[in-house]
Image 1: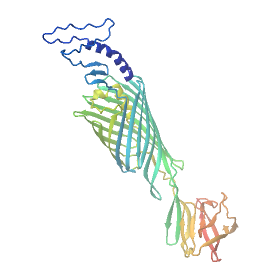
Image 2 (image 1 turned 30 degrees about the vertical axis):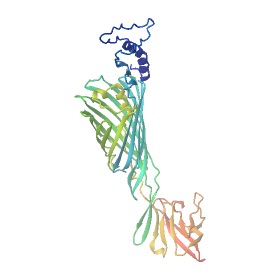
Image 3 (image 1 turned 120 degrees about the horizontal axis):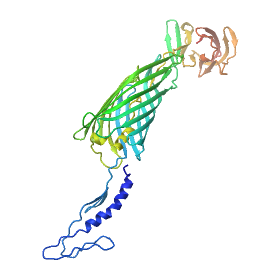
Image 4 (image 1 turned 180 degrees about the vertical axis):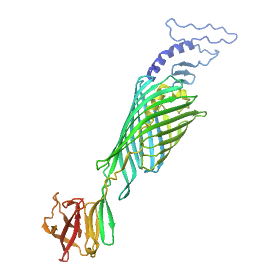
Length: 483
């Protein structure tokens, strides 16, 4: 097991005096014509100090190396090649399916030889995400990974009353088992993953729809329901290195996406999933990266070019059925957190245990959707709020909210004198204790949803006597429609 950096420093500090004593105890050359005996080391083993008397030739001290500690004529230096932490940042823009600019930050750190942790954060105008990754390694070639994520995505949903942008939250979890193989083997890894994603139903306000004919004005309420989806899946994967500096990752699995609708019905879709990942290190510190994944939550493609610490990536996410595809272009940089410049690496170097473990918690799990799984619930059809005879409006104008009709009469209203249902006087109170009809800012408000529901398709004749500002009375008749 490799010693941690602190342990290596301690060993180097203990070993250095031995190397220094050996270097300083060497016999110095004697100029021609002079006789100089070689100094003898003291009996107690302490370092011998060279004679610096005039006329003696000076020799530069030799370069001494003990572990990560070096000593030369420029002084002492300590250099650690361990890369136990990494951070990356990307900035770019999405087109389609919400779109907008965003910045992504990835972070990973090794906690000894057993644990590794990482995080993926995305912040944008239409897309926000937090993913936490953990890796436990009981042995150097066996790893258990867990990822937990939260995603909020804003997309355009096409309701009966028209399109509107809605933000939907989604949570996800993934468990992975990875078996690594010896460096240099054509078979680099075997893995298995199980994962689940669940969208959460958003609270979308109702919308009013107006339908007008030559004789009628109909007001309908669109409930604008969103059906959240639940995804479950698993896959098996293999990593292959068919030639030097190139690696392929292949996966095959199964996914099920399930939607439940407000009328009790549901929709279920099951599909075989496939994945292909490709990494190729090229001369000159260049590297190519590509991924192609198919699944019930949408097909995803990405291609990237990396040069040193800089990289550029283009990705396309088809989203679930009925969603508009989203294309992303991201540019960013990645660097270790030890203050050293990023080095170029071959595939064999990338397969070392520490780098592999960092990669696992640094990269966002590709199986988890980058888009929310939600769709418009088309079983939530618009409900008729009220139907008014245009011939009886006179000079009045009518508007509506999801809960009330608003009638602006030719003369400002002052108060409600009487309310009748089915021709019989009634109290002006609904079942919730609030008024059925009221006056506000000179307009007459009819709380349609507060009237007793006569049943789907049935109507209740309503008559309202209103006191006007000029002390006159006006009668307003309409039908409350059941739902």
